[in-house]
Image (tube, rainbow, N blue to C red):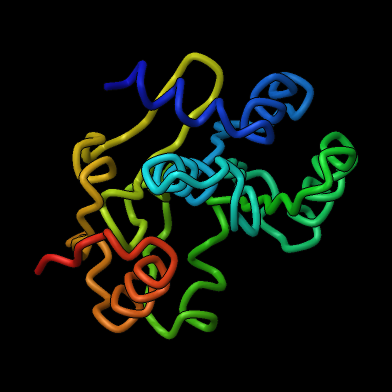
Length: 181
């Protein structure tokens, strides 16, 4: 299934370009994550263009040497310069600082992370816990639920209201997805 997943996400020309330019991004513990990956798979399943409706492309990295917002903005600017010609929104997030802002933004507590993979582990929906970098896939919950369209609440991030809002958003775009409790 891993080969199928890579083949699918690479049909999205933006995913492919980001991964081709990966070395120039120089992100410590860097991963291309989330919506640009699973939404590409769901778009293909639905007969849509791979890039259809994908609002942004998320990159995680982990750097404890400077967890300031200013440092993250500098990395964002550097990555935006490297990928700016793609004409897409790329959002860069230092996972070493998520615990500093998560609660004020989402209204739920968030323990500090030790690496980027732990950030992927905590996505609200286990099927969407995926990250890639060249030649490497991180999918702690496997890929079956992603391909089956099963949306369940992540026990690592049991924020019911946030989950329901996210699941409703996904189902509005891909009605074949199923919410399972």
